[in-house]
Amino acid sequence: MGYCLWADTNERNKVYHDNEWGIPVHDDRKMFEHLMLECMQCGLSWDLMLKKRDIFRSCFDNFDYDKIAEYGEGDIQRILDTENMIKSPQKVAAVINNARCFQEIRREFGSFCDYIWSYSDHKTILYNGHNKADGKIPVSNGLSKKISKDLKKRGFKYVGEITIYSHLQACGIINDHDESCPCFERINTENSTVNKRRDEEVY
Image 1 (cartoon, helix red, strand yellow):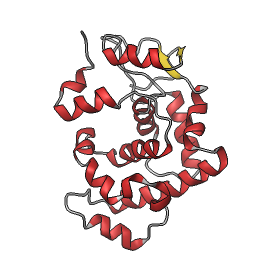
Image 2 (cartoon, helix red, strand yellow; image 1 turned 30 degrees about the horizontal axis):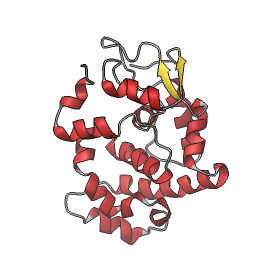
Image 3 (cartoon, helix red, strand yellow; image 1 turned 60 degrees about the vertical axis):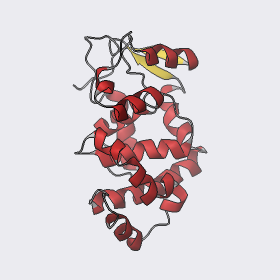
Image 4 (cartoon, one colour; image 1 turned 45 degrees about the vertical axis):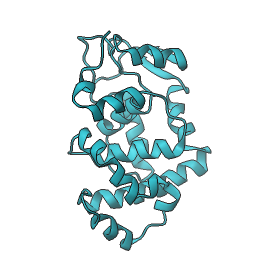
């Protein structure tokens, strides 16, 4: 049985692949965690994000966006002083800023999940050709560019179209598992899906 090649890098990636990547997220706290991990990953490896995930959770109150939104300068320093934490005041400040922006979207739409899933009509997107073993998976596309533009307009930081495409894959809005991977069919069977043509792909 086939498998997504990147999942075999190490056990950490395999566990993430099998239990999280591409599985539709409909819980705002979990959605916020996914998005903030993508934001902090900018310029770094995803494996490092998984390795430091428990540190992030400890520093950011388990990604409770309401608590994070109340953070001040002292919290930024506290987080930066945490052993093995990423030493980027810009990214730490961005997480706090994004928590506040996240709250605004919740106030407007009822939940962040309702907001972001509305872009796919609340269905998991299957782009033609993405799931072939020899197919190319883009780093961004028209959908990620559209969402990135709107989030930036709403004040979010570190949400470029490449970051957002990765987020859409992670939270299940796009299913980019290989079609030979057991997760591909499992996700499609358990969730509503829609087939679409490739969308302004950027490789």
